[in-house]
Image (cartoon, rainbow, N blue to C red; front, side, top):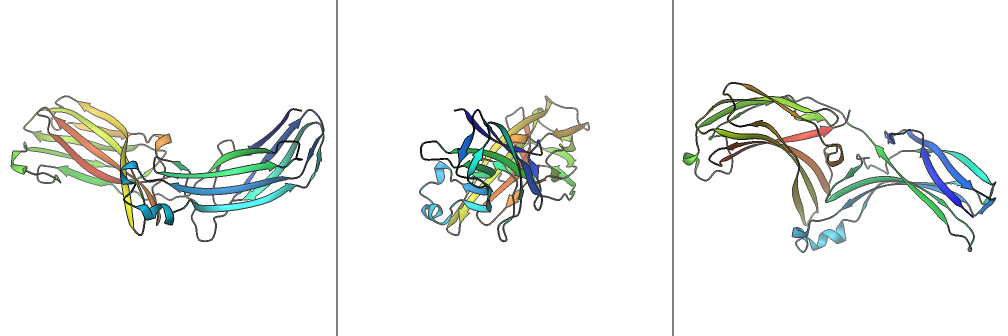
Length: 293
């Protein structure tokens, strides 16, 4: 006997806000009448943390003190034990989306060391001779606000960090601004850059987007930075005094709104990288706050 179970949310994009209700239908299809022992729905939101291989052994207590963090958990019985008729049966449902206790519903995020996932699971229990059926559907809560913070910058040998012999650096002056460091994740990072002067010809100017994931507990924290995008905005020895636009679209699959909790953080930074012909590398770092509006 061919039987299928499916969850269909009302919203095609599967995006919901805290306090709203997840609405949709359960679709049961069967060639013959279907005997069952009840149908239930469960909603779960979990944060899973994982240390990088270089940190294993450093924070042994981490694995004992930090288990998956439950943000939301709820379940309900949709249909009592009985029988479904042959053909297609649709059962409407509503599920309130409310965080557990004082927890916050962070946005869905699939990273290397931090994973935040929200799932809706349907289970149909059947007799001992028939296999139980289950179906899982992922959805995405969203919640944030935006505050614009324009940032002006000026890069010279004196402003660089982590330089051993500053006197050996060529003379240069690079100015510009970022329109905001608090950015809507669905809009591009914008600004402009001007090379006022440089003793050594420039080979390339690049924008590097970096994701910083931090996991830990009271015993210590492991911080891992990963480059997720690199865009060249200028090539060769650009004209001095010419405005060069800064424009970067945030990659959808590798970014999420910035978040910070007791046990984990997901943050983002952008580096402006100037490569000189003598292989000097000039880097200016800007922390970003990504939000969804």
